[in-house]
Length: 94
Length: 111
Image 1 (cartoon, rainbow over the protein chains, first blue to last red):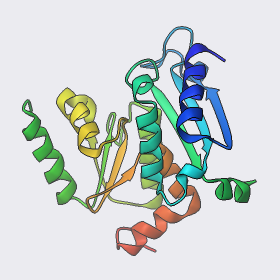
Image 2: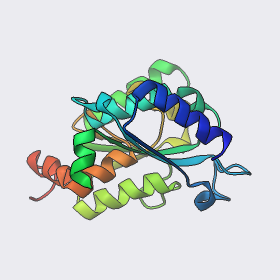
Image 3: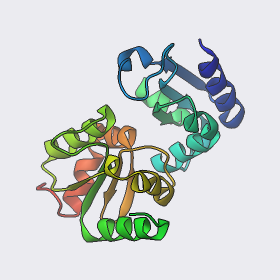
């Protein structure tokens, strides 16, 4: 994984103690598109499974992540596609 | 538009004056971003009437809507004045059938 992905991972781990965390760099799919950077690491999709999401609606869950990653979103990360699940929801999905 | 208050007034009036408002990059006919395009396709598929506001036309608006909604990205969907979310949330709500139920429940599409 790249430097940015590592940073996303470290911050999400610290803030949300996820049971499951998957970070995919989708930048190659967007090369040439506005916001894509040379070397990738501009477009990510992220799956976070965390007990911190219990009782929160989708907007609140994403706000939690947006706040956690505010620095990266204001900088190198152009697009972040999020899936936010509680452990129960994740188990039901499998 | 220049002053922050003008932008907020514009957003407020638009959201309150229309049942479904999509703040997006480009227009419903010509979306200029994959995430905006996805929400357009969902709304069209459900047969919803909505207005698209192209934030690329005005940088104050583009930044203003992020502050107004406390949401850092575009697109942003509002239904009956309520912030629903961005592309990920719209996609999830579409896939689960919640979006259709919500729109039909408010008489915005045929059930």
